[in-house]
Amino acid sequence: MVDRNRYVYMCSNAILLDKNLRRFKPDPHLILSIHLDGREPTHDRAVCRKGVYRTAVAAIKNAKAKGFQVMTNSTIFNGEDPGEFRQFFAECSALGIDGMMISPGYAYEKAPQKDIFLKTEETKKWFRETLGDWRRQGWDFNHSPFYLDFLEGKRDYECTPWGIPLRNVFGWQKPCYLLADGGYAKSYQELLDTTEWSRFGRASGNPKCAQCMTHVGYEPSAVEDSFSSFPKFFELLRDVANTARLARVAHARQAKSYETLVAEYQGGQVSTFNKTKIDEGSAANGNHRAGCVEC
Ligand code: SF4
Image 1 (cartoon, rainbow, N blue to C red):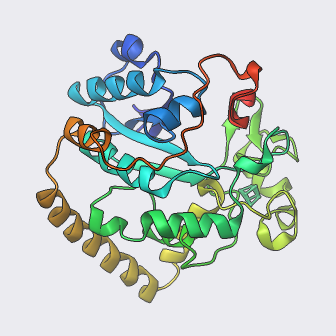
Image 2: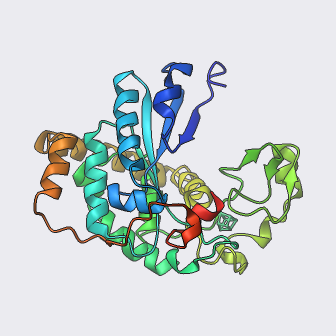
């Protein structure tokens, strides 16, 4: 796919990345997308295993040193501390990664712990608190700025579930990455033609979509909006140019290494994140997140 100039985001928890990196070669079309759900205690709790965060960070450093493009991919759950995540974004930026992806978690039907997922108003409040000044901080998100505005409640969109579809060994999932209500289509055209799109999205009244603000549904809507008219397009261009300018200022101001940032944070600054006990075992002992059960 890379040889065909397709952009490939290769998702990994990075546990085996170091061992397998030799099987790939750096390419502008290949992006290693590393799953990190927060700083060390939070991420290790999320994946139910101590040490995974450190393994992932070491793998990121190694991949960057070898010339790979690396991004992080984080899901935000209810109860996460905005202060910790601001530190997390600063530390990821200091690692020299090529972008960060974030999304509120989706409360899928089989999730045993529904209370860990953010509802729409909670999502907006959390992202407003955490990302209110992301442009000034110089944080490089791999998202349309309009989607980040949407998460902060500054814009409102309807879902575009066909914008970032899921294709797996069964075919094209209907209607979206998060739901498989309609089974699978054999081709993208069949997905478009045979899905009852009016049954999905928040405006449809479908309870499964009611609290969803995930990037798979709403980032395409934000992108479409930004190209929908000349004024919108110029608004986007102005935003991108302004963000780049602010990022240059921020990077010149905060030229701290990842290690310095971590040491400063651990060296006495208030740590307000939820100190829920890290589960060192499997998902089976009950101290886990819903995601571990399905993972
Ligand atoms: S709102 Fe869109 S992306 Fe979210 S679950 Fe419904 S169809 Fe899927």
